[in-house]
Length: 54
Image: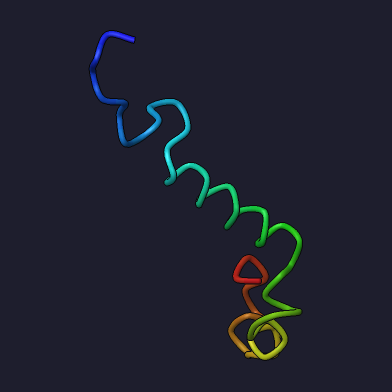
């Protein structure tokens, strides 16, 4: 090596990209229904009228 310190962040795979991937994965598998307020949310009248909110 040339004596320079290693960078703190990886420029190709930043932690923001990892977090975004994890959140997208949780949304796709429906984790809110199992682990959160998904069932309650789905019963709300506005969510029944507007399915894209589900």
